[in-house]
Image (tube, rainbow, N blue to C red; front, side, top):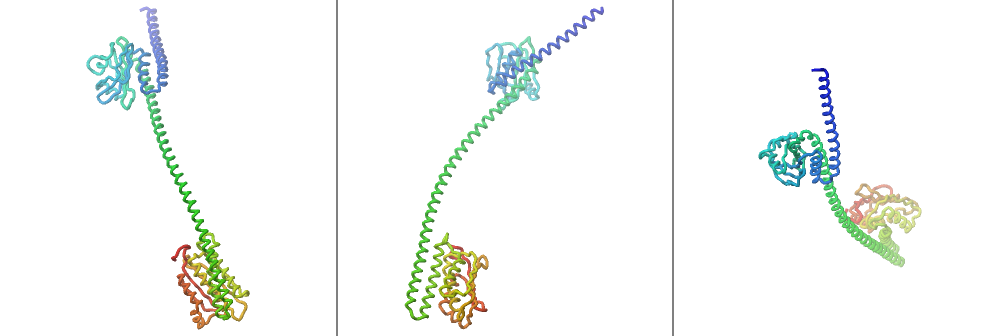
Length: 441
């Protein structure tokens, strides 16, 4: 063969390869352009029910195919849920088909199924018989899930234009776009449902909170009303109680004044002293009611302050200005139930010291001490440095009304009286401490 002929054949072969490569590049460029158009259509679709129909129509028209179908697969059955048939008004949506084993196996493996034989009574034969024109081949591609069921796209190619094998990769890209958009729309719809559910829950919770708040406000208002009523009632009872103590104090002072008037008419010194002692006892009780009247809560009095005031008065009554009287007492509060007997007991011991301890001399020392021995016991001590009390005189005094009252009052307090030997007289009274307002230890 001449050399020129060989060169011509080689050039023709190169030209053919270049043209094939050019066709391939043109095909790729066309697919990219068409895929961009389909992607835009798919991305703009906001209705998941219309998504498959839009994709089928675009792919079928732009790639010049005969038809496109979307099927939902269930065990042993397939339903046409969307379709587009070129140049025909045929609508087979809702048609039921029976998938064969070859289709199920291909979809399970994720592989594309290209069926060229469409005759017979099989799956593709039944689908082919429902179309008006003749179909050369079918391409089946898995398309994710739809409504919770496996989904498959079917594309039909007309006889004489078998292009399914060539456009399969491009159709796969279309399906990927559809699957991604479907999942996105499902997520959006789920988010909307969640938002609607959340809005409902928020509204229900808001209504509950409003109702609870209204109930709470009503309860607060009722409690405030009751509290105001209780405060007013407490104030009223406090005023009444103060008035009671004030009147008792005044009445006791009247009794004391009457005793004093009566004593002034008595010439007998011993009898007049008895009246004076009774007057001191009445004043000791009146002083308790006076301090309760002046107290803030009126449930107890500061008994240390009471003893200071009582001692100062008795020192003045018995005219003992040179006796160094000292009261050692902390802020110990006693209730009314304990203040009266303890006040009378202290009155007897202090007045006894002023009357008898300093006979024959003007000076002396008197110690009055009130302390808590422990959390449950109170100690009252009255100690003088006077002449003392011999045992015979002590027994005689014990039979007198003064010391008799001391022991009776100590019993009333639930305590005991003890006298220590030594210079002067030293009386110690221990009794249990009671809470204010309590009648029991």
